[in-house]
Length: 222
Length: 380
Picture 1 (cartoon, helix red, strand yellow):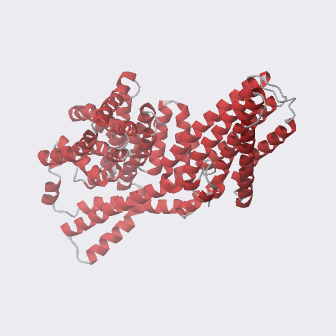
Picture 2 (cartoon, one colour; picture 1 turned 180 degrees about the horizontal axis):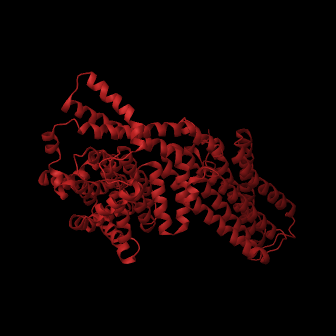
Picture 3 (tube, rainbow over the protein chains, first blue to last red; picture 1 turned 135 degrees about the horizontal axis):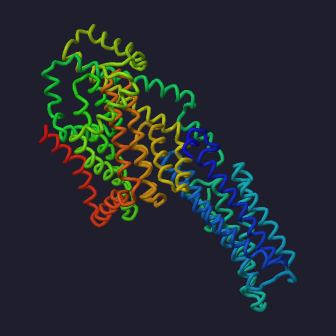
């Protein structure tokens, strides 16, 4: 270990943290897919351990990244402060996505199944789109493509409004509680997954002080 | 985030090879400074020299001179290099230099204590930061309490270091053929000739050479530290992250030594640890062995300076510095009960400072201003 000090590091500190963020994104997508599949007709009991284990891994990676960010800031001083702050913010959002994925899975684990529901096709469309968006989030952090990031944010806004609209409709619907409550919860969780993804991607186009303002009025944006 | 490597390279504005060449040039300036310092004292009158160093014949007086000098320059590398230069010039003997080196060892902790005071507004953070900074103080003070009396009574450290010097250099004479000394003779001679040409002689020439020498040492070490910190920052970061998971004290001691040798400053190493302790990322038990390694690592600068002087006595003093720190580790690290003594003292002081923040300021002023000043004034 001591001799390794004399070898050139494979990657700088922030590049190493970047790689771990990508790992968190892969894990977050994995738990999202397992959770949504469980709700729409896929296996439940056989994947429960995997969902919870992967969520714990996401939490542990968040703690590890935070610790390494503190080490980085202490060693390098203030030169990377904005990047450190963005990473600190980002890992919290990724951890929250992991939590909401677990909440979605808990619906299935509690016996909710939408496999035979009339709106199954819609739910599968949402599942596929949000899964792709989680993967795209990782790609955008790598490519730093601002135009695509803005397009991602615009579509995310539309999705959030759609989910809000669906929750509003359920509040005033005559559906039974067995139908309305799980859907309201699911749309709420999907909205939060979308919003936290927007927070993460906002790091590509937003200054540090404006991160996370996607739950607020759009006039707070740059 | 992914453009980090580019940011890293451009951050200092210089490529690694260029920075490495600059460090080598600064090292040459540093060694030249030691040579100028040692040479300068030879031109001073005997009465003046005796008057200047009258106080250090008292071991405690020497200890406080070393302590105060290090606090003033905030670098034990600078102060021990100057002590080595004094020994090389013959104005200070090995026996007188040993307590000065021990004082320098204690004084170097002031930087980390000052850094810890930056956390004073946040109680829990401050408690952890202050304990992390003062554990280094307590280790050094305990090591002095144990080894200074032993050294005065038996000459244990200086005799052992003298034996090592004999074995390594192969001579117990007044000088030895040092390639480093040969390398710095030319620029030092050029400076002396220029000053002589300008009409400086005797005390004035000696004073100017000493002033220029100290300035060269101070400036060279400051810029070596700055450049090396940029050069090895990524390695230090990786090393600390690995040490966090390693849990082995010996590995942490070695890493502390290697990091300090790389940046040529134990203050940098220990000051980096303080915010990590404040945030709770590192525990006091994690930090303690790294500071012990830093204590050993910082002795390399004076060893290098001593080798450039061509004086076996100077080499002996530099080895005493290393031996003193290694002996301290041998006493206060392997046995758990003794290992915990500096840790408990630091925690105890941090608890007091947590309850009454003014006590932390009082400790800092007392330990690093009042005590060394009174010590120098009374014992001189």
